Length: 354
Image (cartoon, rainbow, N blue to C red; front, side, top):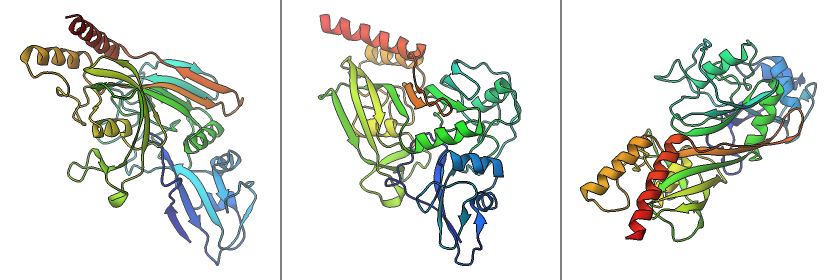
């Protein structure tokens, strides 16, 4: 038997999602065995019940077809399972009384507005105070679902946002909701838009950036555009639309056709429209405008108003896993982005009137 990670749609794993497709090629000597038992024996951190729910939600395929839990695995079958990407480090979650901005909640899921500065799940240097610690306290249950193969420290998560990106996230509260939402994310059926404040103005009011994204060749903690798919770089497409042009900066809307780590930030940097105040991708310096001290001081004051990348997950749409109702949510821009935008508007208007 072999087990590998498969490239789906040219390896288009959406940024921020917590799962990937794993493929198991069944050995020629495999005796007939129920598919739920087969998977349970080979995937860590799961149970037969979790696997059965995943199968019913359509996140398990045998020879490209959905099956029932009692389907018998045979030699040379190919089994595909949507499971959690492993981080390599697991932390025990102790619930913490951290306030949550809940936009919607029922017994199956909740939609929250994550503020900038909040880490989504534990990791190196962030063992407490994360979103999942707050979720564990709010739900007050020991059975918060995890995807098959998921580490125990990521309950309820089917996607994530960077620490300093604000905006909407959906959290699963049942096993079936977890599997159903995971499939929607993987199939690109989730509707998501982002708002960003970026440096400069655009010649065209709408456009598309298409460029491969991979690890930076020297700075391994960030991503960069590559000329092709060598060295693990992945095809990426970002569509953008200008919402407001203030010459020095612009407010834009972004939709991701693919999704890569830091995709919007990397693509905007690549075309010379760095996300404002983004220290990792060259946006925390004067990119457009003069170098005179008065203007530089104005920009520094804007950085103080919004001291993180000006990127916000604005909208979120999906099919409710249990009711099958179309759900759609929008969130207002956070105060730090609003304050910075107001300051730039005033500056632009004053300059235009002179």
